[in-house]
Length: 467
Image 1: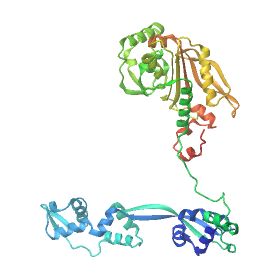
Image 2 (image 1 turned 90 degrees about the horizontal axis):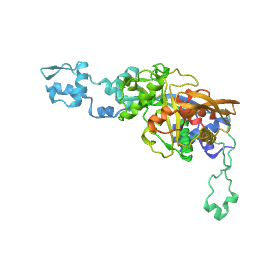
Image 3 (image 1 turned 135 degrees about the horizontal axis):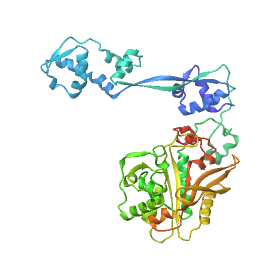
Image 4 (image 1 turned 60 degrees about the vertical axis):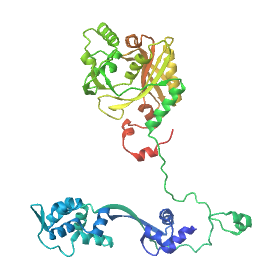
């Protein structure tokens, strides 16, 4: 059975025509033409074809020239009157004089305009604009000239053409009503009225609501989890001195991780902390434990931070030197000078956390991490011994991923070595961890390549589920 709008479309569709024209003749909105013609196509009544068509539009300047004449025509008129260049308007000097000279109409002698020849009766660009105004087609050369002078814009747009097929429409159906009104209910006339069935399969435009990127959504979720666990968020710059990125974390100045092959260095030099006693404590612990001289020039080198642990070090010094228990977390971008592949990036997010409390134990660290990952959606969590330069003991967190049927590493953790926390805040122990953000997101969404998150693909973002 045909819908009443479908019947109306077919009654006006005698030959192939664009959707816009069919809309004008039938009084049906173009959006409805598009949707109902899809239904008519499925029923075999019409064929649809999208054709690309050029749409040429006059610019505001072109409309002005059509009305007032081209600037070069005005310059020629001024030359016939032996006017000076200085008497011309700004538009006539900047546009008209150049074209009038190029066309051989005028020349300038000692600041005066001299007419060289008479104007042709029908000036080409003016003729072209008038043709466009009358919806006549331009030649390729005419288009090129008008485009060069920015008098027209050309856009390509797709136009839907609808053509009736040889299939005859069904016999006219008794008219159905698609709105049940108050008057029909009061009078009872609805009993003898044919009501149109609600078609839930009717073609319609797919709505695309605004959606945050999955990384932004996970950052928000992680922030909420840590806030619920009583943590405060900490912040820090992505550009850091080597002092905070390496030295304050007890990483020796000749450590391989400081090489250009692993770290992005910037040309500028950074200053050391104003607190000379802090610098002296860090220097002392390095020279005592690692041996050799500790050099200020190495500590002043500027880097793109290689981990968000630099933020933890800064907060230990600035906010944790009293004896109050503190719990902090941060989520930030870090940078490593390494080749990218399906599981490595040169820049990525890291989830950092510290617990500053003299009564803290290694078991408290495991409890925090287990609770965090459970809230994130991972039930099976395992801890394995590991090694990290600035924590001892150290561990890595692995979770069981059901889809892959395997354990996967998601981050590292441990207790800051006394050589890290004592010089910074004179406190021990300090629980600490650095976790991946992209990797659990890959697991939760069954994504096999970490680079997928950073491709400019709006279609991919639209398809992602809102967790």
